[in-house]
Length: 154
Image (cartoon, rainbow, N blue to C red; front, top):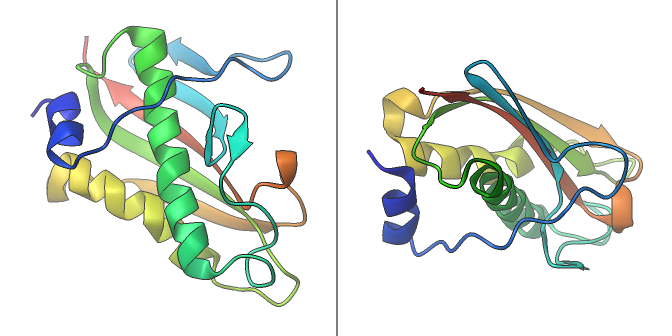
């Protein structure tokens, strides 16, 4: 399966990857593993989902934000490698949710990204580990930040 073909089938266009916002790398490859720094649900400088989930943002809006942040993560991989041809599986997904004090639906929000992984990779290769965490604040007042670790074939 070609990941870029699958993205096209799902009508998903990868955005231009953003440069690092500080003294870190957006992507690091070590052996057959690629690590992607946290990605916000944004296009260019515009963050699309901002505020606390459960207060300013609905869980459904946050799910869409998690999906968009995952797409940005894939764009960062493509920008670093030149293509997505060697990505064989997402191994680990971490979803940070800017949560209102009484919001406890972080896992449902993270499903926005997890379900897209399953759509892209299928039931066998789409399985991944995941952590979803409620946090008090995220950069740029974003509602979601997603980081991922993926396996590469060489």
